Amino acid sequence: MTVIDASVASSALLEHRWLSPPIATEPDTVPSHDQLPGLDAMEQSCWQTFLESSTRLLETLNRRLMTAHRLTMFDFLVLDVLAKSRGRSARMGDLAQTLVVGPSRVTQQVQRLEADGLVRRSRSADDGRVVIASITRNGLMRVKPAAHTYGRQIRKHYLDQMSRNQMIAMGDSCRRISTPLAGAEDPERLF
Image (cartoon, rainbow, N blue to C red):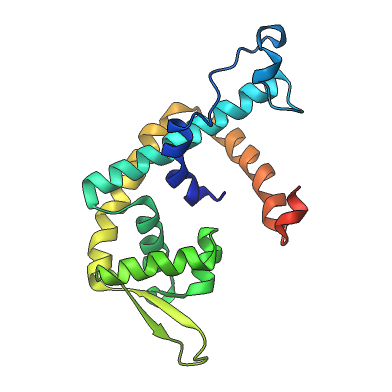
């Protein structure tokens, strides 16, 4: 599951009880049938806390963007990448890679944004097989205020919850997790 997809899955996680109930940190207090195989109580508690906090955070960001700007978080991320790209355009494949999602997910999202007049697609002048997504003037007008909301919400719900040292440690931990996953070209190598 990608970071972007986590916001979509968060309600399913919470509704279908894929998130286990809170786990005590004492190994003797956790019934063995509640533990995931291969994880001790502390490891499971750490994982569950991460999973719950990240899905709640992504769901909150998504809800705030929808309420204030009628944009999902993924809408915003696509528009933000395009707004910051050279020429305010990007190849669809590059867009998928930057957003860490599959090409079909980007295609569906860009089609929806195009129908709303926020993005337009065209063929590359250099290679007719390549599709270029470009942000429109309407897209720029929508993404700028949404960026302020997004930044404020990240500060309120994420950054303000940690000291500077905790932020540095969190960033380091996330890099330690992300780097080997980014290098795995074949999903089967992850298992």
